[in-house]
Image 1 (cartoon, helix red, strand yellow):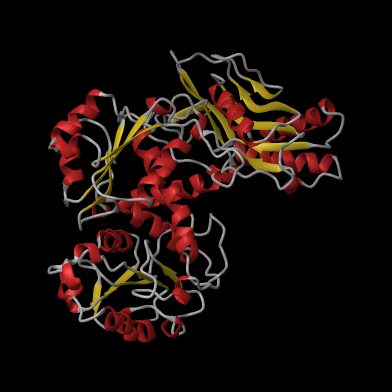
Image 2 (tube, chains in turn red, green; image 1 turned 90 degrees about the vertical axis):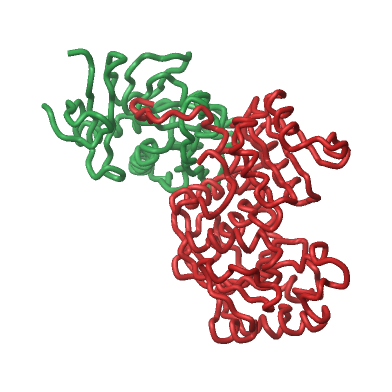
Length: 339
Length: 192
């Protein structure tokens, strides 16, 4: 694993290694001294061409907790606004000695180009590209799901230990992903990762918000939320944000009105009542309270939305560790003889 | 004596300690820990993954057998040092092990670190750094089943199961029931 670009590329073993490493990283974050010396002397560049609060801060926190130096680069206020190309930006970063690049870009595929064009030879982590992929978000969702559903089942509202589900996958667990699938890179990343981990995924959205080609993804598709919650009984419900900024003026015609969307696809208390005792609710944030999720549902005991954010730092620490700690890759694994 | 072990590389290796030898060595180490610390109060035993963990468990059990007021599980922990190693960039990334401290913590305790083989001393240096981030023990002592020499740092073992003079081209394997299904210390390779 040289880059982290796409969850479809992750093997089951790699995914489980990432999740297990996340559990150990999360354990260090409850200590009094949270900083580890692991990546001392390494420089990580946060290359953000698109607005982001939690992902950028989460990556920055993760890198700093591992003692790496962090350079933040946002398109606004940089030479990009003067017309510099991605290539020239990459060459500049390479010349400055970056050891890893974390990139968010509005164009799907930009991280892939950065990783494979030969402009710079360092690990690239995709922090969200267009409507394509957001692998660290999917990993933190999977980690949250595994902690709650991977080992012993506990009632929603209780926080299982960090080691619950350690080493395991999500075989047979049912996850409903509900909402704006069309614009959601989180949904795409989750479908592939959860499938690799053995979970069964159903996408629930109005037909206008299901992308063309979704029928080839390893998941089921439904247009009726009530039916899925009542008859399928998912172990987890992941609500997606309605991405109004990508819908154009007047909602872009994807649904008649916000109120109608909320009535058919919003998660409220009544729909929560259909779920089993252990079922949990996820949301990648930022939430539109009152649109895709009601305030009661967002704050209910089933909601693990705040936990997702804190798991985000641990997941990104794990990704940085696994990509950066052993940078000079060699194929001969020295035996641990005598150490 | 030559026997089959599942070591990386060599299929044939010479057994230098058997199951009974390991057991006697650990019992002696437990008594030495009690003697050195004038009893067992405040002793905390931390095993370094992978094979230091079961060894620490056995030592804690023996301490509990010797001193009735000690409860083995209450003084036992594990200390993973992966993220403190100085050779991370020379190897493919290692999986990170678990760190579990006993509920009483390590502040003002006598911490006994346990590892299977003491070689360069770099693992123990990493362990001392890891410990520093977790608390402030009153003192830190080191117990190792094998001391094979070739130190690269000024570190020594307080309690040694067996000193095993080796050449750098030889390899030492410790095999333990809990992980490998059998007990034994083996030596392989060397210029012969």
